Image (tube, rainbow, N blue to C red; front, side, top):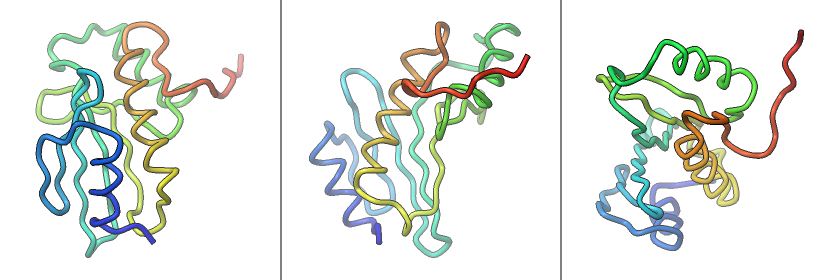
Amino acid sequence: MMTNIELGTIFKNTAKVIQDQMGNWEFEIDTTRFICLTDEHYNRMRIISPITESMNITQDQLLKCMEANFHTALDVKYAISNGILWAAFIHPLKELTQKQVIDAVGQVYSACKTFGSTYTSGDLFFPKSE
């Protein structure tokens, strides 16, 4: 069962932690910024990373993000909130394993890095039905 304490330990072991508050972490991998927010009471967790301001996104990029959410973004989704395009992994907290958390960070990282090109969170993708 995943807890805030265990999440904090995972982040400290895998990234440069900038902010470390129970249930609210900010960390970096390379130059990519991540935020993890949890709510133990409601059993929710999200790992998010800002990509760009939403006003900078073209209509074509937005459509590619929506297609990626269905085919190539897997457990991560492209989402807009407060004028920012984010890569977001959202999951029940308690059910997560350490391996899934590390994989989630990797997927968010990949979704950020491939925005504008392949729009993918990893090697696996669902084929498009024609």
